[in-house]
Length: 370
Image 1 (tube, rainbow, N blue to C red):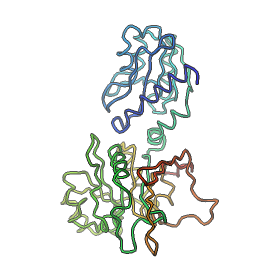
Image 2 (image 1 turned 90 degrees about the vertical axis):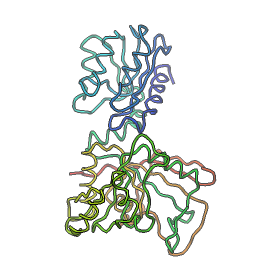
Image 3 (image 1 turned 30 degrees about the vertical axis):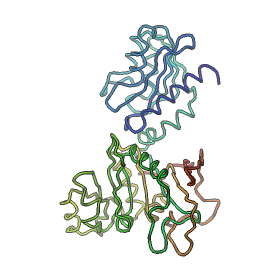
Image 4 (image 1 turned 180 degrees about the vertical axis):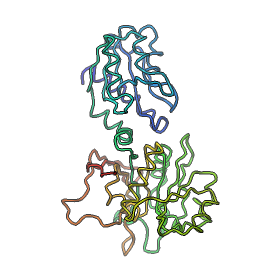
């Protein structure tokens, strides 16, 4: 790795620090260097706060003049919650700007690069672009398709069961694995389950301990049969809770009862389950939700996989064997041929105090969201 790449790699590491705090904005990192030596660095730390470039230029001070800047995403050129980042770079009189990835956001989309080159600042693009694309994937999904990045998560036994034949499932994974799940919950915008999971497990669907981001709880419940005394319904006045129903099957009385408790009722459009899931994802994207965590059960996960709506997978495998006619994690129709099975890419395994933890991304193309 040459020095340019190492400095951009540092910017990408900095960008990662904003995960869970900056969405729906992208995670962005920036390094200012003179003669290959870092004189300032920064990252986008909080939604609504200064962007990475402004933080890095401020840290560099007068040393930014005639310096090289390494930024993971094309600098913005429009006035939003903060001033345009290109203005900070121009005012600092930097020499060159290395950009890892272009920004497809309509108000930028090449405009940041053009603005810099128009005033004589050299811009080089594409440095560590593939790694930047990985980091920016949820943001890019939201901007380009209008839907959030969907993360599927489940815990299962060594023989692929998510509960015993009697329905007992607490706890399959160990406490350390569950801490990882809560960290994941703290950085997403929504946590989604099917109504069967609500009835079987009565989950809280919250991050513990809580973080700065409070995820909306989403329940797939075609008939609006979520019990009023369930945790998600009875605490809906404290934690945002959305019940996604099928207007043709959910009675007005049941919807009104849940709404009285503080639940938001959303009647997803479409006659088929896939159509309603697509509509729901479009709706969550319209609310600028960037990451949605689907936690189960088998029917909900199967529906998302069948609809090709899952982008990323987190699986915890416990060294236990349940056996028997017990439920498995992914229901739905599935595929008919192994060659049609969904394949993870960039997957990695690690041991978590006896559990095995797999995370990876699906390399299937996104579905038609129209």
